[in-house]
Length: 345
Image (cartoon, rainbow, N blue to C red; front, side, top):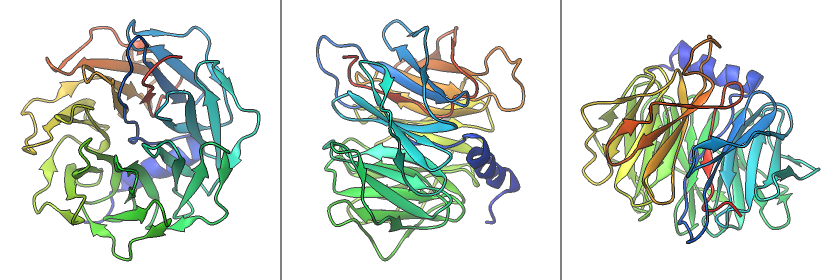
């Protein structure tokens, strides 16, 4: 199936207007710690980062100024540092507790999109959409490896297995997912064929399954991590699925449907989608789940109409009841990704 014009436009717009990002994307929550409060980190097009207290659902009154076109975001497992990609080919690091940006950004490849930090906290993987490469950054020293890793066409989503051994990279303008050996920094010679225009990717906490959103075909593919084989049947979701996040308890995958203004939920074990999707704001993009698996946070980018009351906001969904909170959280212009720390330190 040929990539749709709309999907191609999404990528181009993002690279020209900060539609960059990740997580697993990106945007995956990590195990929480007692007596601490999680913080949601939200980049948006006004060259800044919003932070939200997850427990109270309140945004900090002051945003954190960063470079032009922030988009992708991932936090380290200790919750101390956020990595943020910028459309111009750089990555910023944010001290989450101090809410300050490091004065020096890190130069990576062209059009960095999603970013993921290995669960062992050692390395950040950055998908460079324009370069067709992945950059790796040493988290401790903030230094990029001199050689980038060549993958497929227009890499977007990136996620790392819980054992920190393998990175999965969705190649958006195609139908494949590349895998990279984290230790050797080598790509597997054979890519995995999935649906049309794969965009987001997430790996289950048990490390057995990778979920991939196929934005061109309105489906989600699942891949057996050990055998690198795709399940023969894809899962139909809403229109233009963008990002996917799996709850830390491993039970449910949340999928943002950018074209439908909804979120689909999938039973991670049975691969069955809930028959009813959850309405959120306009153009939902990023999704992340709190460490206790109780709440999903979804960014509403609201492209094309800044007067929508549900636009430029973050919706929250009760995971157990599948109900959206009646009031969204207003953030900056066109929030695209979101990551949740294990704590606010």
